[in-house]
Image 1 (cartoon, rainbow, N blue to C red):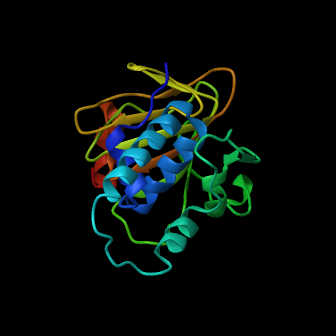
Image 2 (tube, rainbow, N blue to C red):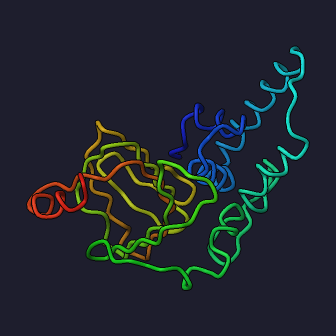
Length: 212
């Protein structure tokens, strides 16, 4: 079983209308997840057929090139994932000097985060997460959507296990505690909008400072 993004996000990605952080996450997910590559091809085929039946609209001559440049090197939809170190191709432009050159901040026991800079303003936050073996994210709820894409290793919450290429999606209705597998570090790409709400005593102490 794979956990992939909903078709609505693939459709936004195919249309070029997704905010940059989500576009990066979806492009990376598609590079890693065969089921989503197939679904994206189908959506692109349907979209192409529909576009062929309507009059063309005027667009800037370089619109396609500017959109693709935001995501870095791209892979053909059916190609096997390519990596630079541990990172899929769509992430390479966002981590040009490697993982160790990023500014990692401790976010809890066994958890570190490095925020990635985007080229366009957005309400969403794009970051990499490192979870030590057996470590993870404290139990929390959400004020907005959260996407966590596994790049290497794996983690579990009460809804299942997530391995490379899987996306864990959570919204205001979800409260969970992701825990990394015990046999190795878990590296993830995360997109969030709004602060998380930590639960328990830790939440009582930290939530006021986090704006949650």
